[in-house]
Length: 49
Image 1 (spheres, rainbow, N blue to C red):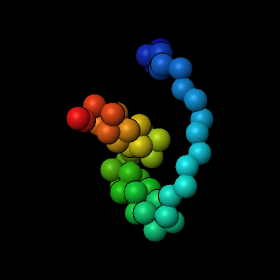
Image 2: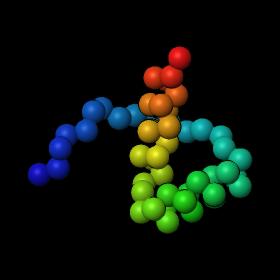
Image 3: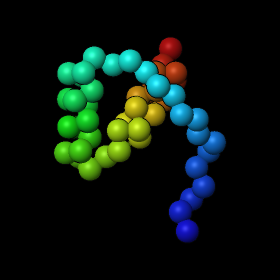
């Protein structure tokens, strides 16, 4: 059984198309989920001073 994830909410955001495509391509290349990549980036952002 997979570990339980914390409560998640869906959000939408505006991103330049070229940036989205580049990020999506890199995530796909690394076999990562774009949602996980964005979540990790947000976590780093809020932890920094």
